[in-house]
Amino acid sequence: MIQKYNFHCPKCRHHLNQNQDIVLKTIRTNGDLGKISLSTTVGNYSFEHEPKVQFEDGELVTFACTSCDFELNSDEFENYARLIMAVDENIEFDILFSRRAGIQKTYLVTEDGIETYSGT
Ligand SMILES: [Zn+2]
Image (cartoon, rainbow, N blue to C red; front, top):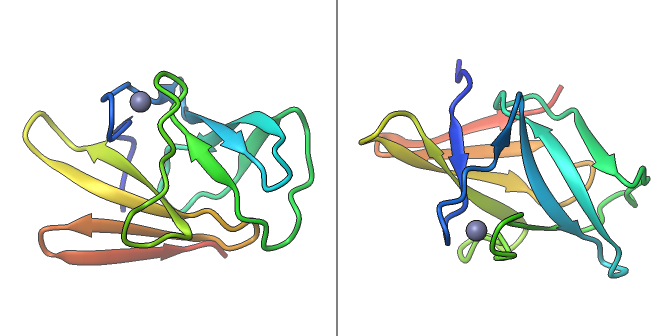
């Protein structure tokens, strides 16, 4: 199972980890801005959001880098956000996670293929 690694913005390489979390900006479909803390454990979908909100079921949330405001939408999979996950200095993977509220899916793109994680 994937343990705790470092996550980076694909644009500016900003280190997105804060303590045990990945911290990102959020842009809701209604334009509201916020900040989300996601677990760094792949497959753990608990999160905290400021301000406290109830996302609409199926709402497409846009995630953005806290440093450069780059929107992390994947080019290939528009309903997914993409981050860089660094295993060590030489090995990095793309990690994709669902932007739709309530859909708990994560894809890890490695040289061996794509691993899928789903919420329980
Ligand atoms: Zn950035």
